[in-house]
Image (cartoon, rainbow, N blue to C red):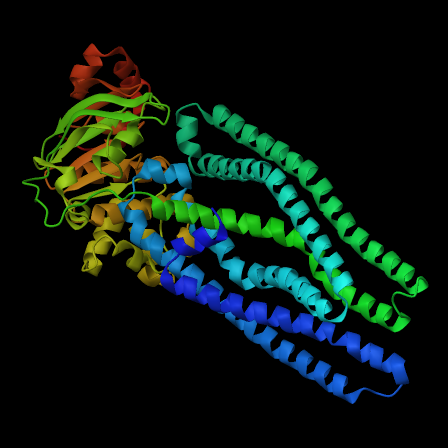
Length: 574
């Protein structure tokens, strides 16, 4: 993407703020160049008769003061443009993210890191990079234009040198671009692996995959190390080469000026003045290498956001149809990977309204993917999902949100109070409803023992809570929802035995009031379910009640009895 294409893709208010900031930065750079050019006649006048050239001194002082004022205004405009850009990007994300297909979004960037990463990086473009970059380009150009009025041959020589330096910088930037992209991809992979490794320790241990997860993390770190070394090997020679080229221009101009003085083609006074002006030409250029690399990183961050904005949204018709009940049915679902291989294939199932259903299977079978398709976080490549006998694609976003609630292991919490986070599921919920939801996940006594109680601040992302508390609070929010269909992914993965037993009893108690589909690696809930679905390698291999599957399916029999002591955790009769 070129800079102009990026600007056209931004909201109108962002483009306006960036144009204003750029205009002030260019004006400040031109006044900086004018201040340098005015040194030439001032120095020449001093050498000519030794008297103070008050006219040129006044002009230089006026230009310097004007440049300082404009530079101050340019900085203010730059920070204002940075704020406008971040606000516009956040508004765009808030408007688009709920309507995007999850796999398409993940191919561009992880949604949970967009605000912390790309938005903050893009915000720095007008605030910290655009002004210095325009100064580094416009000031030398202004110096050259001013020199054309004083000494055209020297100005022409500097113009040619500037063009050659620009070509060298562009070549080195393109040479490093692929390596920078590889390092950025490796950095994102490390972040994903580290987050998964840290957040899902109980699940990894239960599935005996901790060693594999650790190896994946180590491999990702090794790849990041290798790509960083490769980038350094590419960028260091390029940066040093450009710096040497800039110094070579200065040395060549110095030697050329000395030769012209010796040949009486240039007087000493003008040589001194030109050399002073040459510093104003060279100094900004020497900063271009660092600015160019930083700007490329910021452009990449902005490109990530613009690719998110360009993703097609899931279609949600208005007006829409309404589900007849809380039953859920899937017909011949198929979900493909990017390479065309099937992640889910020929999935057909039916959940009766008010039933408790459990989805089990080996790690990597596609359970979370199936849950996401059933909740329409994205659409399957083939087949359809019916909610209350209505194709889920015929529901508006509002109706869909009111009809189903998904609770994943990494559901987000927000800066604010405990009560405010819970009421995101049901804004009109009273205190007793909040207490009931917290009691259902074993969190009530903890909350009411805190000094601020329900008004306790949980920090950004729930940072002031433990991992188990965050998960139970997210689950309580899901249970508080009035949506008749609840889709839960490993709701007890990070809980201790007491909290797990409380959650499982609460889920069983919801039968009849909600339709539940629970993904789990624990057999305790499966024994109490109305229906157990067994998923393996993207296919639904078996379904039925616990007793039936225990007798007919070898994998499920091993799964159900590998932790036989779990049955004592629940004192619940069907």
